Image (tube, rainbow, N blue to C red; front, side):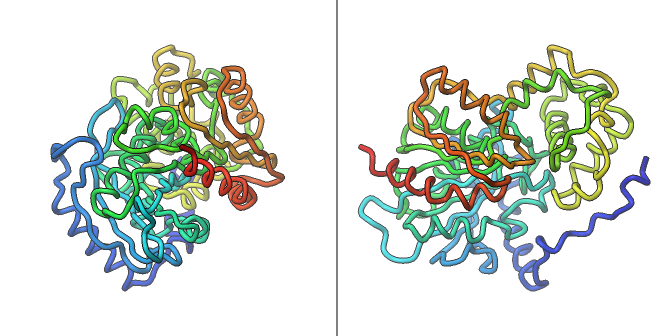
Length: 387
């Protein structure tokens, strides 16, 4: 089976950086990490800053006036304290009365390994986040727990990702006094799930902040409802990256739920794929796992109530209980998060009487970010203006 991974694991061009920038980044990361032992106990509640410093200049999003790298405590899988890292970007000019309103960004799937973390690669949202920055919002961007910090990143564990998004705001305000209490969650793909789950718990989890709403784009939903169909005969899907995403999800579950014998559901190839997935960023994993189907990963059906319950706990997006408005954007040509799954989410939210805005666009997964920007901008502006 090893021959199926002979394509190598060299970083793609998107992750390449100059030797000088990488050296500076390594030195800064080492300096921050040395102050936070891997098994350190939190010195305070979620959002407590463990260490902070300047972000490598080459990693700033365009037009930022200042940027910081921060390591902070959050809540990981199972409600356990966990470390996360992230970046804080300050707009140019003078902060308005009450401080800069905050947009907390959740990024899409990039991998499980520490070297995949946005603050380690400098791939921090670029021009898209600049559009928010130049409208007068401070942008804070979590890496999520386990990306650049101890442990395997629990990919698509909605609650831990949501906690990282919320606690990033707390940590950012601790190191940048000019940030407002007012904030919104914004995310795409994996980050869309994080934003939606954050929307369901932000007010109760962080009552000292003034949470105003959320924007979720390309939100992966209803995957837990497909899990019982998982097995060796699972059909190949005409979608992009599905095997990589499922391997990331199962690798995260295997690491965070040792009480579940995840390996017992995997074929020999599946175990090898998950082992490799822990160390490959998305571009390399997509190349290495090309031609491998989800069915080939599995040796038996995912129909045991124990694993199905664990997957539901990880993946499910609440369909009731929201106390602030939110916006969902979906590309009708999306080959990563297919529209029918989002349409079911929208139908369930509507049936439960939730108040939200839904827009669809003639675009694929990433194209939806660009086409939805005017609508999302209007939504966020009104959310901050609301009493």
